[in-house]
Image (cartoon, rainbow, N blue to C red):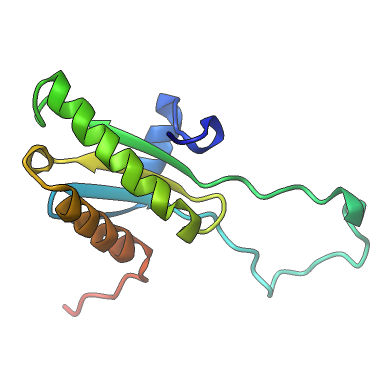
Length: 138
């Protein structure tokens, strides 16, 4: 089970991740990944500290949400797919940058997919979503 701080629960959080994140679909899953913007070293900073160095704020946790629609199957099948995806994502959350948001959407093929195939599809989709996007030649 994912900790409460690692779960997406509000529809606005899901919408922000789906609309603002990078999308990559592989096999039986589609991944929407939102990575927080890193501090740009070229931006000017003040020589004065903004806050006491001892009161450093911890970074936001990486959060995950799951979308398994009725197109995947009945309630039993949907819950089985959701449990499998939750276990797979829990193992991979530490590899994502702190503060990232990931939404995993199961496609109807996920109902028939084996656990190793779901793992391979999830890994490929996460890798594609994290890689920089190449420009298409016209």
